[in-house]
Length: 528
Image 1: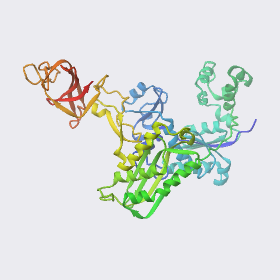
Image 2: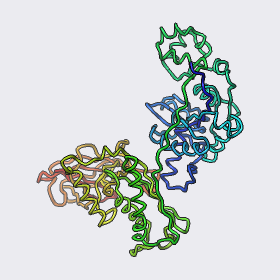
Image 3: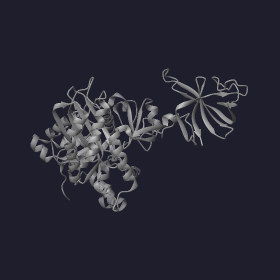
Image 4: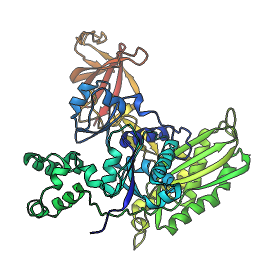
C-alpha cells in the first residue's frame, strides 16, 4: 500500500454563510479588492442555510442562540426567532470559493478543492519554501485573513482524511500538526461520525463501536465481508492509512479583459468605440477555450472614484457587438442630460472591465444544420431593434408576486433574465385566486357603483355593505360577489393600504373586477 502523503488541509468554517454574504455584497456593487469583498461580518446577524428543511450551516451568532446543524426549521426558529433562513445554493458556494483558490495558488501551486470551503495542498513544496510545515500553514492562513477570512483553520498530517480532522478539531490554535506516523493515535479517540456516513455510523453504534480507534481495531476481513469494499475503505481511513493523492485543480483560463484610458472619456459613444477591441479580445479568448458567454459582468470606473458594476444576461450568448451595446447602455443609465456626457457628480470613464460571469460549451450553441430556427431569427430581430432604440426600447412581460394585479406584471428589457423583487412562489395572503382577469388596467379605471335608489355603495370598517350594488357606470348589475378585504402594511402609515375587492357581472354578461378604496370605486380588470 502506498504510504500517505503529507498534506495541508485548509478549512473555512461556515463557508455557505460566508459565500452568501460575499454574493450579497457583490450584488450591492460594493467596492472589492481582489477577493476581499468587504462582506458583512457573519456575527452581525443570525443566519441559517437550509436544505431539505434542515440546517446545513449557520453563522456564529446563530450558534450562540442555540441553532445547530441538522436542526429542523421549526426547532431552529424556536431557538432564534429572528433567524434569517436562506436556501442552500451549491453553485453560489462554488462561485465564491473559486477566487479564494486562485489567491492561494499564488502562494502554493497545486491546490485541490475538496468541496466549497475545504481544500488541500501537498505539504512538501510549501514546507521547503517557507521553512517548515507550520510556517507554510501560517502563510496560507495569513493570505486567507487578507482575503477577509480570519477564522480559517489548517491541519497538517499524513493523508487527506487525517489532515481534515486535524483542521476541524476545535482547539485554541488555528494550526494543528499531526506528526508523521501518528495518524492512528490521533484518530483513535475521535467519534465515528467523522466518517460522514450516517448508515454506517448507525450500524456501528448498534454494535457498540463509538470511536474510530474501536472501528480500526476490527478485523479487516470481517469488515469487508459485512460492509463490502466501501466499509473496508472507511476502515482504512479510521486506521490513518489514507493513501489518496492530492490532485491539483486545473486553473480556469483568464477570460476577463479590461482597458484603461489615460485621458478620461466623457461621451458614451467614445467609450463604446474604445472598447470594441477589448470586446473582440474577450470573444476570441472564449473561442480559444471552446466556450461562449451567457452572463457578463461589466465594471466602469471614473476619475472621481465612482464605480458602476452590473451583471448582464443574454438569452443565447454574447458576441462582440452585444458586449459593446451593454457597455453603452450601462453608461447611458448613469449619465445625466440628453447630450450623453457625464455631469453632476459623475466623472469621465477611466477603466472598463469585461468579465464573463457564466460560460457554456460552444457545442450547445451551434446553429441548426438547415438554417436558423424561428426563435433565433426572432432574437436577432429584437436585438437589432434594441440596439437602435436602447436597452429598454424592447421589453418583455414577467410574472411576479403581489396582491394587486398591477404589481404582478413586470416588464424587463429584452434579453435580461431579471428576477422579480417579489417572487410569485411566495405566499401572498389576500391575492386574487384563479381565474385571473384577461385584461388588467394600469392605471386603474375610475368607476361608479350605486344601489337601486342611486345612492353610492360603501363598506364599513367591519366589512358590512351599505346596500347591494345595482348599477355599474349606469349599467345594470346582474350578479356580484364580495367584498374581499385586502389589508396591507398596517404597521407603516406611509404605505398602509386597506381596500375591498368585488366581482360584478353586468347585463351584457361582461365580468369586472372592482376595488373600493378610500370610498372610491376603481376597475382593476375585466374577465372575457
